[in-house]
Image (cartoon, rainbow, N blue to C red):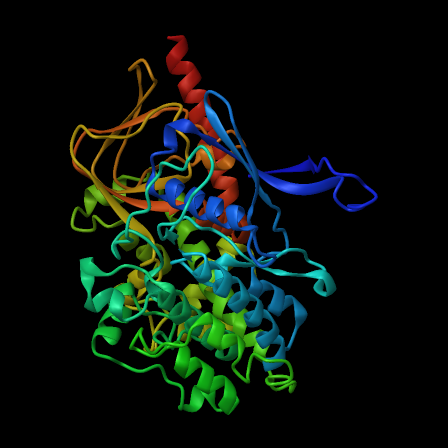
Length: 502
């Protein structure tokens, strides 16, 4: 995504602020326009554009194309995530939260009214237009999972159809409603899907906890099983003692297990908690700390494990001597558990995360980090594995091409098992990578996101995918990971040049 200046050809007497606007430019190769995510996003953006847009949606301003690319000009959203905004603001009240959630409800009311379901509503997709608190407007972003109902569409992409969203391939499980699991493959995201997700977000805002993951260590499968058992969100327990009755009532309506009885966006706008003066102005003591802790502890732990995986990349000796430990996560676990105790203590977490993030942790902070990860007094291998359970595993058969030189790259991969071949576009082999190695980081480190090599599976391979969003978050938190990645990238470029000159 590139920031540019966009000229509005309008008479300045009538539009004094329209002459020069900062916007974002998204350049997309036509080779990738058959992807489901691209079609969903452009269908949604075109629908929103066609209807006239909405101030609380990061929308399409214009679209152009040439023989090889589409160019989407969209609203520039540079104020960061909504949760980060609340953390920067300091302790906040329910009224502060209500003002932001009202803007989300307005956006959803518009979207649902014009036949668009976002289908992946989560904290990361609620962003602020600017860092300036007084001028910040909430924007709903990222329509890569959106579902658009049949209405007239415009633009050169009008022939793209909108398929139902199968629950196994889109969205974020932690924010899915119960019907996503009970209906299985027959489930399609609807407006009520977005409302359930908003209920989860509201609960997190006011408590700093996920309603179905109070300890911060539940896997997607754990959350699925709780919802299949019709487990109710803990709205009347100790974690919500500080929350007003009106806010609890709204959460109950948003997280109604029956989608036909779930509150709509329009109804939410009339709820007393959302209406002006309805939510309490009393500061929720420690609110920003709880919210920051919800994000920060997990981010630091994830970044620490990522950094260890980078450091371990290419170290095959240990794996050969101990063939039963074939998992990359197990190898990372051994780094944390350097004494071979069979578990990771709070001191182990503090030691490794301090090394990777260069952040000093007190004894209490180490214990808090452990408590954010497990209910137990230490981390077992099973609990440790759950810390990165949101990452996707991908499997490729022998002979499969994972990506080709020149492809657009938006992920990197760790090899959990198997062997891959790195080659040039014309077939010259550059190197062989094995279990524990990683590849694809180059297209994430550099502005040119094209793949520099072709990767082919020499055996069946099991890969762990790191998306660009997670990658950027990890390296921002872990200086050691960034330094090691740059070193590996430089060595690989040198190795490639040497091989090609032979």
